Length: 172
Image (tube, rainbow, N blue to C red; front, side, top):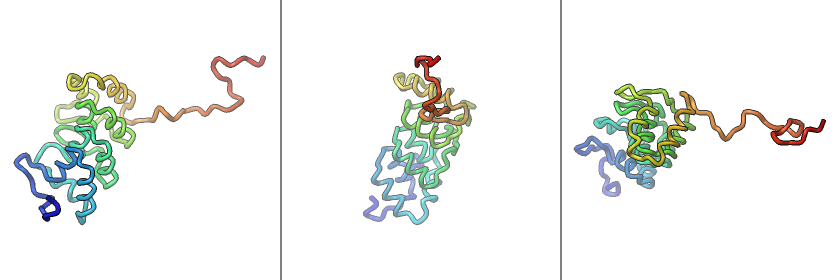
């Protein structure tokens, strides 16, 4: 399509652009190509606004972490909210734990609500039937975030050789 100089901003009956579709279906090479070929990548952010989800929302909903990462690197607003909510709502509602984790690390505000007034955690609980296997992990991640995510892999206290350790013999 792009080889034949098709308009990257045309929309289908659902209001989606070719870029939206590439993000939705995980076509990483096409997303990369379109980001490089468009003079101003910011134009791609708002080209398909006739539908309810942005390219970021579509990639998050379908578990395409690499595409979510590329969009954020190219200036997409991690906290962009539509009637569906944020990309975090989409990822959590569709059981995409890896994307949820990535968005939280990227600094998304987990307390934002969708048009129904639901946070991503509430939306995930409501849609737990979609992916019951990952819902527990997603609920844990979202409960832990409380509006701002802190990495659990970085310890708050740095242990030194002189600090006592649990189970260590008492030198006294």
